[in-house]
Amino acid sequence: MTNSSSIFQGVEVPLYPLLKALQKNPSPKHDKIWQECKSRLKDDVTIEQIVGITDSFLKSNEARSVCDFPNWPSHSKREQLDKLLTTSDQLRQLHKDEKSLITEFLSEFIFDRCGQIMLDEGFKPGAPYCWINHDVLTNPV
Image (cartoon, one colour):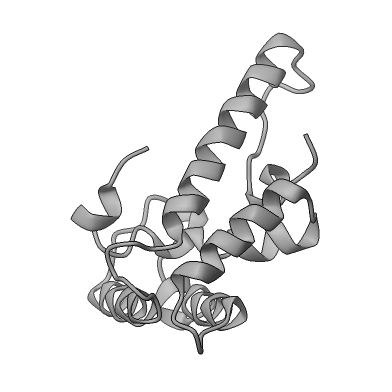
């Protein structure tokens, strides 16, 4: 695990949609993460609000403007970065402590699951490559 979010503000924003994937595949481990996340938010804030803000950013014209995959890699644009930093600030302000974000739990979960998936696939590969996204990460072990 790294603390890159405190160095590079905004890199934490794509972690929040993992919350939606955790809801799709409920399990005791996912419930624990969900509860830990809720406990770090201000009392009047819901996880659904966090997901909504994140989805709004990821679907925005500014964020989509750098998703030109045939011409990848795309350079960041000022408008995209401004919107990213504004979104990050907005999400941080919804936490009880801006230095104790819910992304800590989400990062740990991703790190753990990616390791499990890589080891499982390494011992018995099912394909020449494996696409790891939020839905794959939350599939039952």
